[in-house]
Image (tube, rainbow, N blue to C red; front, side, top):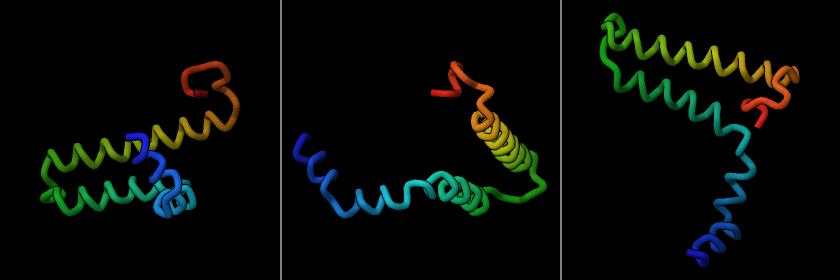
Length: 81
Protein backbone atom coordinates (compact mmCIF):
# COMPACT_ATOMS: atom_id res chain seq x y z
CA UNK A 1 0.00 0.00 0.00
CA UNK A 2 2.78 2.40 0.90
CA UNK A 3 4.50 1.75 -2.41
CA UNK A 4 1.29 2.61 -4.26
CA UNK A 5 0.95 5.90 -2.39
CA UNK A 6 4.54 6.83 -3.18
CA UNK A 7 3.92 6.11 -6.86
CA UNK A 8 0.83 8.31 -6.78
CA UNK A 9 2.67 11.18 -5.06
CA UNK A 10 5.32 11.23 -7.74
CA UNK A 11 3.03 10.59 -10.69
CA UNK A 12 2.16 12.86 -13.56
CA UNK A 13 -1.52 12.18 -12.87
CA UNK A 14 -1.26 13.82 -9.43
CA UNK A 15 0.37 16.90 -10.94
CA UNK A 16 -2.55 17.22 -13.35
CA UNK A 17 -5.04 16.80 -10.50
CA UNK A 18 -3.30 19.46 -8.40
CA UNK A 19 -3.17 21.85 -11.35
CA UNK A 20 -6.89 21.63 -12.14
CA UNK A 21 -8.13 21.06 -8.57
CA UNK A 22 -9.97 24.38 -8.41
CA UNK A 23 -12.16 23.41 -11.38
CA UNK A 24 -13.24 20.04 -9.95
CA UNK A 25 -16.38 21.15 -8.04
CA UNK A 26 -17.95 22.99 -10.96
CA UNK A 27 -16.99 20.20 -13.35
CA UNK A 28 -18.67 17.56 -11.21
CA UNK A 29 -21.70 19.77 -10.65
CA UNK A 30 -22.19 20.35 -14.37
CA UNK A 31 -21.50 16.66 -14.95
CA UNK A 32 -24.33 15.86 -12.56
CA UNK A 33 -26.75 17.93 -14.60
CA UNK A 34 -25.59 16.24 -17.79
CA UNK A 35 -26.00 12.83 -16.15
CA UNK A 36 -29.53 13.76 -15.06
CA UNK A 37 -30.39 15.00 -18.51
CA UNK A 38 -29.28 11.71 -20.04
CA UNK A 39 -30.90 9.45 -17.44
CA UNK A 40 -34.12 11.23 -16.53
CA UNK A 41 -37.16 10.80 -18.72
CA UNK A 42 -39.75 13.39 -19.57
CA UNK A 43 -39.48 16.87 -18.13
CA UNK A 44 -43.13 17.00 -17.03
CA UNK A 45 -42.97 13.79 -14.99
CA UNK A 46 -43.35 14.44 -11.25
CA UNK A 47 -40.26 12.46 -10.21
CA UNK A 48 -38.06 14.31 -12.68
CA UNK A 49 -39.38 17.67 -11.53
CA UNK A 50 -38.65 16.79 -7.91
CA UNK A 51 -35.07 15.72 -8.70
CA UNK A 52 -34.35 18.86 -10.72
CA UNK A 53 -35.92 21.12 -8.07
CA UNK A 54 -33.79 19.48 -5.39
CA UNK A 55 -30.67 20.09 -7.47
CA UNK A 56 -31.50 23.76 -7.84
CA UNK A 57 -32.37 24.09 -4.15
CA UNK A 58 -29.07 22.52 -3.07
CA UNK A 59 -27.19 24.74 -5.50
CA UNK A 60 -28.87 27.83 -4.07
CA UNK A 61 -28.12 26.75 -0.51
CA UNK A 62 -24.50 25.93 -1.35
CA UNK A 63 -23.92 29.30 -3.01
CA UNK A 64 -25.58 31.12 -0.12
CA UNK A 65 -23.45 29.33 2.49
CA UNK A 66 -20.31 29.79 0.41
CA UNK A 67 -20.87 33.54 0.33
CA UNK A 68 -21.67 33.70 4.05
CA UNK A 69 -18.44 31.93 4.94
CA UNK A 70 -16.48 34.52 2.98
CA UNK A 71 -18.14 37.32 4.95
CA UNK A 72 -16.67 36.04 8.20
CA UNK A 73 -20.05 35.60 9.90
CA UNK A 74 -19.34 31.94 10.64
CA UNK A 75 -16.29 32.33 12.86
CA UNK A 76 -15.92 29.43 15.32
CA UNK A 77 -18.78 27.39 13.83
CA UNK A 78 -18.88 24.03 12.06
CA UNK A 79 -18.97 25.75 8.64
CA UNK A 80 -15.64 27.42 9.19
CA UNK A 81 -13.81 24.09 9.37
